[in-house]
Amino acid sequence: MGKLLGFLVLFPSLFIGLVAADWNIFSQKRENGVGSSLKNYCESWRMNVELNNIREFDVVPQECVEYIQKYMTSSQYKADSERAVEEVTLYLSSCCTMKGDGKDAWIFDVDDTLLSTVPYYKKHGFGGMKLNATSLEAWMLEGKAPALEHTYKLFDEIKDKGLKIFLISSRKETLRSSTVDNLIKVGYHGWKTLMLRGLEDEFLEVKRYKSKARQHLINEGYRVWGIVGDQWSSFEGPPSAKRTFKLPNSIYYLA
Ligand SMILES: *[C@@H]1O[C@H](CO)[C@@H](O)[C@H](O)[C@H]1NC(C)=O
Image (tube, rainbow, N blue to C red):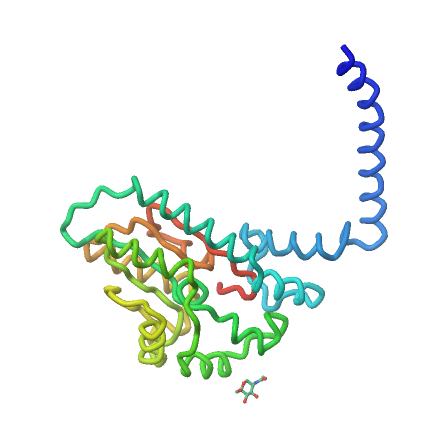
């Protein structure tokens, strides 16, 4: 009884509180057009990039560069990535009725899935500057990208399960030896094929190039159980995989 009375007394004030708060947000929105604080604005920008609502951005909005830098170097970024990987592990525990004919396959992206480009972006405006492909490729040629710890463990788990691993990257063919060296140096080995963009694919959209690569695998009789990537263009377009897992990345967008 006492509780009920308390609720009745509390409820109207809560209700008034909510209305007042709503009204405050509304008036703020009208004042500065972004609603709430800069942190809220940048977090919702980031979230909508992940949801694939915000597409084809060339640069991170200037006012959010610092926020995105903080996120991509934070424990939250790690936790988000690890959570995605846990979901892959869960899926792997029951997903695949393997035929043992060597045709069960898994696809990984390379950049910001197996290797991190964060050290490059740290030195080059953290997504706030338009991409300079020349300088990014020069950095990739050095082969010093670190591994992403969370995917590193998953890579071996998938390999040990007997799945053939295909790496489909939008890096150019000219970067092959430095990419292979880099991957091996940080501990990745035992993939089946590394697919890179040759001259004939260089002018294709990443999305088209990657769907063409998947089609190629399927034509060869592979069953693609899953894809792990950091870009929506790694999953879109036919043929798809049985499941796809998106890792966070709000520094750049590959169409
Ligand atoms: C891009 O990077 C290269 C190599 O670092 C540099 O020479 C060039 O000036 C840069 N281009 C632009 C538009 O900044």
